[in-house]
Length: 315
Image (cartoon, rainbow, N blue to C red; front, side, top):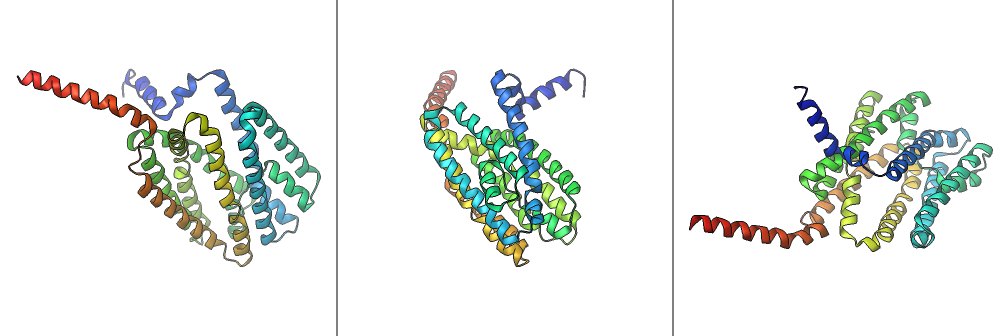
């Protein structure tokens, strides 16, 4: 590769991955990205040790599962309330209030070990683990190894978000969602199969290489199907529905873990994701976005002009 072709290759790659758009974005956009990076850094640290911390407090797997479910149910209630008032109160004010609640949550976890107080703190701003707890329970991995492992998988997940946008440009939003998430779902069902941690880690890493590729295309697809004035409410409803369904998962996982059937949770979750992907493909594979419908008359006009020019050249 020559010196002149290398910069062009880098420019094309940055454009495909969306990095050029970020580079040319306003300062506020960059600050929001930095803020989200810092927030997720703290959330990831908490999610790694939360289940392990609850275990050290002497809680059973069933109680830990109930804790996670009640946390997500509380998140559903808060998300639904914010959906209704965020446009009236102002999105900046809502984000500021959310940041303050997360700070309060961290303080509460640092000063008390009461189950119900910790539950309130978790509802205010702590994410849920579960895969972390599985690797600790089955393979007895230390916190240091778990931290390194999930740091690596998070890096892969971050890059998969960038690749997802490039894939959607080539094959469309719906196919990008399905064909990237489907292999991830299959790998999820395989994680509890190996008796060796090495193979389980390989499945986990491969899953994270594709797990988040559908995030960008999914958000773009939902946004394209909704009127701009309705997007805040629509996105909020989507989040509430997803969180509502997820709130039941930890209870079942806790029961399965208590019965030494933790692996069943992975199989069920993977199979449900596979059904979701196939259903999405069947229902929306021929769906056209609002932009595509808006541009269709122009394209038809261009085709008619091209046909007319071709006929005149033949004459």
